[in-house]
Picture 1: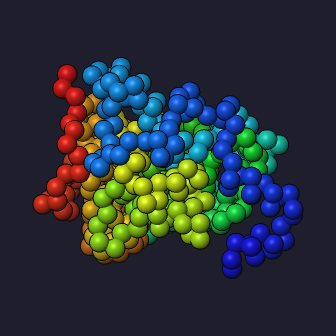
Picture 2: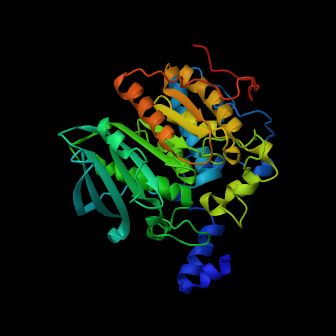
Length: 405
């Protein structure tokens, strides 16, 4: 079905107009953070052949101290919001949870609950949520997963719960349909913001965490967020922008996620391909498309998102056979982000895990996630090497290094 048919199928003229305005306009000044007005357009930006230096401030100086990094971190957020994802509204203060059902599962090992969260202006935004809660009093660490449906569960859900983790899945498409030229419920509720679909979905994960913070059986000092493919992109963005997520695990996230725009392995998805208006341009702010064919003018790359996660924990899980998701580029951004983790004194917080196979979030990916979470949350050592490079002979894509204190 082409975009014109999508728009014409049962949609009002108002909805079509809103879709047009959202797609082709920028946010008002009030939705932009300080500094965004100073950012240049694509043809005014310098050419940067290697990965941009995350330690180079906008005024040209370089980070020397952790205080400098705090300032630079704010700049990184401004850059990725302006050029790539758009700007999110603040958290609503009216989240209401309606419990729809509660059932004992896994032979009494867990309780499965279905909830409907309502929020935003007139509580018009509705998000379906599933929770798998281990038996016992808790508090339990939690893994938030975004998916097309809240009814999906990890392939080793029973094992995850047995290891003491709650699993919380929300339906991201309740917030914004995965469809071009459509204004979703969240965008309709906040029309003054220029957030694209990935930002909407990530904002939803933050709102789920808002709800978890009201539950005494969830340990909100130990909350991971994950997702697969476009869900991995969503998880990385949420983790980059919301410091309450203590572990961020994008899986098979590729272009616009843990992959690299500048460095592409064979048969990998490029910025030009993913932002094609006939494909997934609506996931991103329209500014990103202006860099198609001009990738060396992009003032950031995806290691900036990974750097924003530091000093919290980050694990990229991927597959060697998933060429479209750019395994080489994921290694490159891992190495670049490692400089930031090293600078902040937490080298062990940045990890990656590659397996054989293709594009999926399978049992091996989930076991790697839980093993890494056990290490980061509880100091439990495993026999996994979360520093093992899939392409050890590949050259680094940058010459800069972390500042030396």
